[in-house]
Length: 472
Ligand SMILES: [Zn+2]
Image 1 (tube, helix red, strand yellow):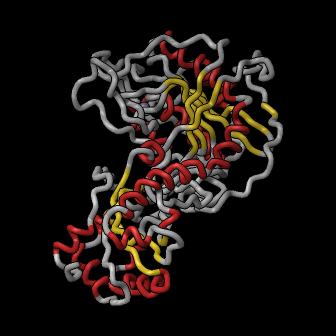
Image 2 (cartoon, rainbow, N blue to C red):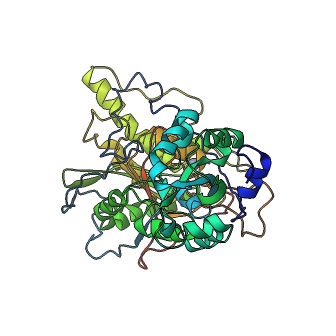
């Protein structure tokens, strides 16, 4: 064999496993800090492990979900939560979860006699930057030949005599993952290995591995046999922890249909009255075993004589209106407490349209906030007839909402779903399709929440269809 470091050494050692490399670069979270706070509100609550932070990898400690008392409201008093059909809640996938199944990467792998393992690992640590060898924490770094997936065993075994010897009987060799090919120079690796003279067989190859950690034991087992021994660390680095989702689903599943019925009702009213499209939003507070409506809003994009030629007034989308109405309750309380008058804005045209316009919106707006010292919509629940547009998705995040449920996906214009959008639709103009944004849970954003798509039960009349190019 030629001396390590020469290209022939590398070419000879490198093997053609699966050469497809799909690398998706995600921006790393630069900071988990919050944006500048709004002066009129108290400090926002810290993002902690029992809200839904991506910072924590620990399994959340969760108690049982108890019964919930639904507080009376004229909009729901004629409905019985026990008989209403519950529908189905489907947790949304994060962008990382959508990509995990088909995102692979390449790593360098070498092999050494077992007795030299520590020495070689220390040598690699010394010569290669720590952050480069520390990535890919879901891969087992040191692997016995007998633990390799079948295709690699066959491949490594049949390469040369040394390989055959190593894979025969009780082996005294191990394979070591060095690091990601894209982060490490071949030359560096070769030089480092050359400095170690304890092994006669200088072996270096590239292996295809899953780029993201597995989110379950089943995934880990599958990848261990298809790619490389993979470790599941009992967390979900790609999204909310499974136990967090199942508990939250338990919490909301019995009464989701109730809040949705109100959202559907106000959506219909918005369209019938001509102020907007058939889109609606309801904000619910759930705490200490009680759930109650805090805000109700229909779409009002056409309110205030907006010409019906384009998209209407985007600031009057139902999600933003509902959030703003809840925020106004806090302002109202603050002013009242300070002995200041509560004034309506003096505007020729109110772009926010965040005063109640429909009968359904009035009662929720008039009632005082049960938690007037709260911060924006922190921890509240938002029920929407349609997947929110990108603008509203970001508004929802900024409001610190805790949970969002929507009934109808808006594949082309929505901001919450992560799946590729528009690929199977025949009349989608070029440029309209693309990756879903999955804004409810992104590493680079400083707030995350839980989100579900909801399939209504058979007792809820469907809303009039909305053009798929409309932004909800
Ligand atoms: Zn919107």
